[in-house]
Amino acid sequence: MAEMLVPKNQSLRIIRYEYRLIFEKKGRARYISHLDLMRAFQRVFKRADIPLWYTQGFNPHAYLMFPLALSLGIDSSVELLDIALVEKLGFEELRDRINAQMPEGLRILSAGEPVMKHTEIAAAEYVMRIKTKLTGEETVKAFKRFLGQEKIEIEKRTKRRGVNLVDIKPHITLISCEPESDEAVIAVRLPAGNEFNLNTNVVTQAFENYLGFEIDSIYTTRTKILTKSGEKFI
Image (cartoon, rainbow, N blue to C red; front, top):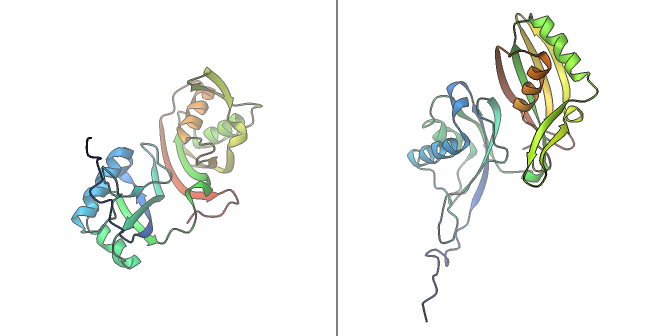
């Protein structure tokens, strides 16, 4: 009878210390994909000699969890990364050791113990700087008319039903919309998390379709991650 395969580290019972890192991803780093971001952090942790905790199984890997992945091309000052260590480190020491090895555009803002569960994430806020062939004031008025429609329908593909029309208007909360020079500076709150997730790219594409011409430039920054009650996720 063949001998049963047993994970090499099955008998290990290593204590793990959990940390939640809040970091910014800006400038050129906004074009790093989610997979490459994970690889970048793994290299940083190795250079910084951070004692990561590894899963105990046939294929052990470092515990790195991004609760809410960021779309490519978007800035953020509120990105989240949960990690586990086999040694207890001070929050400031952990932050500083990591930052000393970080590439341009990535920086840990704070480190602490996880307080809330990932399932509590319900929304995120963004600031979009939109420039079109219109003036900033005209773009603002156009966006308000866009949101004033009875419905804002987009095509959504599903495996079972193919292409469906989905009304995203009820899911867009406008916080502010003001002209600034030749741009429209628009702050919105969109659903995020496991239940329903609405990407800003979907909103701006729908706005472009409404305009009937291409938007010249869009610069989006994620500014907050919130719970159902509107609390800051920590």
